[in-house]
Structures are given as structure tokens and as C-alpha cells.
Image 1 (spheres, rainbow, N blue to C red):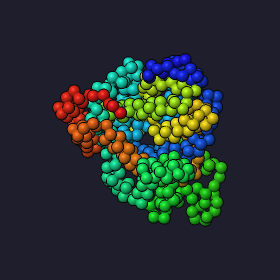
Image 2: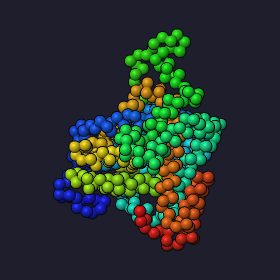
Image 3: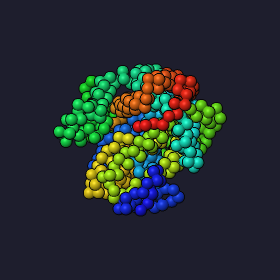
Amino acid sequence: MSEDSSTGKRASPEAAPAPGIRWGPFTARVPFVHARAEWPEMVQNFVVAGATGLAVVPIFMTAFGMTFELAVSLCIVQSFILCSSFFLFGEPFCPGWVTPALPLVLAAAMAVEGIPDRIAFVTAVVIVTGLIFFLLGITRLGALFIRLVPLPLKAGIIFGAGLSAIVGEFSPRGESIARALEYPVCITLSTGVTLLLLFSQPLEKLKARFGWLGVIGGLGMAPGFILAMVIGPWVSEVSYDKFKALFFDPVSGEFVFTLRDLFFLPDIAGLVRGYSLFSSESGILENLEPGVFLAALPLSLAAYVIAFGDIVTGTAILKSARAERPDEEIELDEHRTHLSLGIRNLVQAAVCGPFFPLQGPLWTGAMVVVVERYRRGRDAMRSIFDGIFSYYLFGVPLLLFFKPLIFLYEPVLGVALSLTLLLTGFACSYVALAIPRNRIEIGLTVLTGAVIATHSTELGLIVGLVASVLLLGKEAWREETD
């Protein structure tokens, strides 16, 4: 009988942790040795995760000067680093990005003139975020740091991220029009269908009556995204000419597809050469002056606060399944989580620095899907790691190696990005506004969030902190009740 490091409570006598290879505070697990295949999760990954992972490709191309091939290569590299969370460090969470921080980092990055300076700035954000996680993991001061952040400021950071995400989709992007105006029908349909499937209260009753509707709802963003892919050509917002040209010559109509066209080979050498922290050709180190790190600090602190909330959320989801699964002891360790996140972000910065979504602890949607089937017992899913490994195809982003699928998704990646950001904005808003306990805290949350979204993260943090102290006093640091 062992002890859960996060709660100090004794686990059930029948409980046993999943097998693995211990190294330091971590546990490595080998695919098909310590985790077996679960087909429902593998199918969902192929449908959902591939398009989600590619959603940021257009930004890497426009904001950081990458070719399409290099941007996809970066998505592959970050996916391997992401999956080290469970196969190298033993984290029992479905890992993801710090998605609410994405619009904040992106907005700050786009305010930086010149691609080289922009790359250096985002790389600094990734480095500082990694160092915060690593240092607070070593010192075990993460929870204390979070308690020092006033509650309205926490809520304001999350609300500001959500507001920034929504406003950004309706704002011009340099010389380009807003994405919401570039793909009005596709974005409206995909977002509307996704919100309906995920959040509609009337639809919940129908899901209970019709199992097939529940299955569709469990696919998250995929149904809305697929609908946009189908409707796009009909409303002249999407063209699949490049995908067709992969199979048929545009002039003669002759079939030209060969075996070489089946697979996409990532240009890792080109990626490292052009965007690695330590590459002499990238010039990132030369641009990383002390002032750049200072400018990155407020964003990294905001990202840490958001990610800490994800750690709490993931822990709560797993604890909620304990009653149904007394046979497995899930080892929850906040300090291990901090260390692994620090390492992942620092490795990301070293290999390819400007990864603005950041390496985060949790993909909440995937975690909920995996845990819901895990609850059904050992016959449905032997171990939580079976579900996690399978959802991420055992750490291999298989879809990203198939060129036809990449070319099929390419014309609608702008829609996928908008869908991701609009859902992030919706979710951040309702999470943030559920935190305040009274009208003053609601006002502080909105004030802080509005300053973050319309001006800058650093100014928003200052305004939120000062206003919380002046208007609430000691009550600003009250304990969260929910």
C-alpha cells in the first residue's frame, strides 16, 4: 500500500501503479511493453489530433517566415517532445499546449518588428517559461507562488487570454483581412456545430437518448472541422487544387501519383539550422539580449498561472475516477509535473525556439475522453496509460507523415486555427467568470482581462495587481472554494 504524493492519502490495498522504468523522480514506459493499444482512442487521434496539431502552421509561415514544409516539420518535432510527457516522464495526463496563452504570446510577438527579433522574443518566452517550471519544481514552491497571485488577477489573466483570442479572429492581420472574414461560412459553421456538440444543454438530453449523437459529440472539434472541409469548396472559401495535383496532372489529367508522394519526410536539418537556439545560422543567440528576456517575463508568468490551473484540472479529472477504478494507483506528483514541463519547454527552445503555443500539461478534451472510458473498468481499459498512449498513437504523429492527408488539410488550416482560438476564447471566458465571488471581483476580472487583451500582458498584470490590492485588500488572496 503506497501513498499519493499529491494528497498524502493511502491508496486502496488492491491498487498498484502501472509498470515502468524508474529514473530519478520519473517513470519511463515503453509502447507495447508497458502500454497496450486501445483502438477507440487511436481512431479518435487520427480524426482529431492531426488537424489540431497542424492548426498553427499558417502562423509559423506568416509570422516566422517558415515554408509550409518547415512548419509541418516543427509540428512533428513538437509532437515528439509533447509525448515525452507520458512515455519518458510518466505523467498520467494527456499533454497539450498552454492554449489560453497562445493568443497572448502571438499578439505580443506580432507587435515585434522584424522576423529575426520576433523569433528571438518568442524563443525567450519559451525559455523563461521552462525555467519557471523547472525552478519552481526543484524548490517545490509552485503552489506557494500561485497562492501569492490574487484571485481576481488569476481570473483576469484567463479572461484576457479568451478575449484576446476572440478579438484577434475579427481583427485584420497586417495586410491580410481577418480570418473570420476570409472564411466566414466555414468558420461560422465549424464553430457553431462544435459549440452545439460540446456545450448545448438541450442537446445533452438527446445525447443520452441517442448513443450515436454522444459518439459524434465525443469527437470534439472533428465534426465541425470536417463539415467546413466539405462545405468550403461549395462556397468558394477553400480549394483543393494542390491536393488534386498530387494525384492528377492539372493540364493533361494524367494520373501522376507515386509511392514517393505517399510519405512526408520532415526537414529536421533545415528546421534546426534555421530556428535552433544554438545554430550559428539562425542568429537567435545574438538577438537574445537581457531586455528580450525581461519583456518575455510577464507572458511567461501568465502562461505559468494558466498551466498551473491545467495541472489542477487534470488532477481533479483523474481523482474523480478513483471510485470506479480502485485497481490502479495513479501516481500524481505536482513537482514531477513541474520538472517535466520545464525540461520539455527548454528542449523545445533548444531544438526549435519559436514555438508560441508552449509545451503544457494538459489537453483537457482528450483527458476527459480517455478518463470516461477508463471509468468503465479494467475490461474497457486496463490502465490509464493504455488510453493515453493510444490517443497519441504511442507518441508517433502518424498522420503528419502522410503527404496526401497533409495536402488535404492544408487549405483549411486557417479554419482549424480560428476554430481552436474561438473555442479557447469561449472556454476561457466561462472559466474565468466562474472564479469571482462578488461584483467587485467580477469587475476586477473584466478590467484586468480587457487591459491584457487591448494593450499588453505586463500592463494588465500591473493594473490587476494594484486594483486588487486597493479594492479588496487581504480578501484578494482568499482561498478558492471551487
